[in-house]
Image (tube, rainbow, N blue to C red):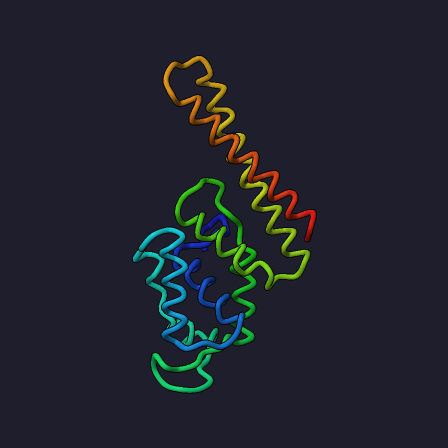
Length: 177
């Protein structure tokens, strides 16, 4: 993890693989294809993110083959893998929007049901805090440029509106947990 306890690109991929296996055993090749599919559809192709090896997860004892060999092996998550998954799922979230952060947030929502209700609420709080920080940053920028001509203020208004809707949605979701 980074110093601020947020996920690196490789840890995001690890989260994806372990989360998929937490849903049940699957073939090595199916897992690799599923991770690649999810990651590339959320953030586009990235060697930084797709570089995590399933072999490394096996070597670390986070997943284990239960039958078959090589890429036809059926893998399942271990108790250590479940513990690692929880650590990854409860990691902090960067406040700035970027492709990696978008992937981490998508993964948190994809596997949030694997957490207990208290941890789900905590994750929704972290997501809300992140949106709050982004909203405050853009509102300050908008205030600074309120009298500027051009299209910046109009664009900022749209971004602020999107963030306010996202915050309302997150708060409503938290109330339902």
